Length: 293
Image 1 (cartoon, rainbow, N blue to C red):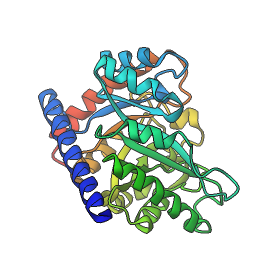
Image 2 (image 1 turned 30 degrees about the vertical axis):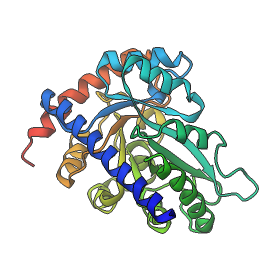
Image 3 (image 1 turned 135 degrees about the vertical axis):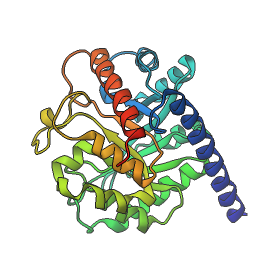
C-alpha cells in the first residue's frame, strides 16, 4: 500500500511539474524571452505591507509570481489566489541541533494547503558547523521527513545554500540531496550567497554538477568581488557581475525552472526596485534567448 501511495505521489509530482513548465513556456515564448518564469522573492516586496498588496504589485509589474517566508502563510497563498498569481516557493528553516525543533511546526499544515499547486518548499538548514559533514545524519533525517510530507501533496523540496548556515555552498546541498535519496529533493543556486562564499571562476563547472538536481535559481544585480550584501544584492540593472553569462550557461545546460529575484536589504522604494529589475530581466531574457554562444 505504501508503495502505491509513493507511486501516486510521484505521478502527481510529474504531472504538476509538466503542466507548470508548459504553461511557463507558452507565456515566455509569447514575450520572446527565456522559458524560465521570473518571480519576486518577498525579500524584495516589502514584507511589512499586506500580503495582497505585495501580490498585486508583482502581478501588475509583470512578474510570474511571488515566493514567501513561511511566516507569511497562509495570508500570501490567499492573496496570490485572489489576485490570480502564483506562489512559487515557501521559505522555511530546519536545524540539525538535536536540542532544537527540527523545523517550523506550521510546515505540515502549509504543505497540506499547497497540495497540487507546484509550489516548492525552500529549505535552509542551520546548526552545526557550516559546510561540514558532522551533522549530515541528522540533516538527512530532516530532509527525508520534509520530503515525504511534501510528496504526499505532490510538492518538491529545494535545499537552500546560505552564507554561514549548515548548508552554505551549493555542493553542500548537492551532497545532502543525494544522501537523502528522495525523488522530490533538489537544490538551489543563489547568486548572492555563491558570490560571497565561492570562487567566481567555478561557475560553469558548479552549475553542471548541480544541473541534475537544480530546482530553483535566484539572481540579482551584484558586483564581482563584492564582500558585503550592499555590493552583492542590488537591483538587476546594477552591479558588475555578468548575469547574461549566468543565464546563458543555464540556458545551455537546459535549465527551464523558475528564477527568483533576491532583494534582501535593498534600500529605496520596493516598487521602483521591482520595476527596474523586471525591465532589465525582460531585456536580458530576450537577448540571452537568441544568443548563439
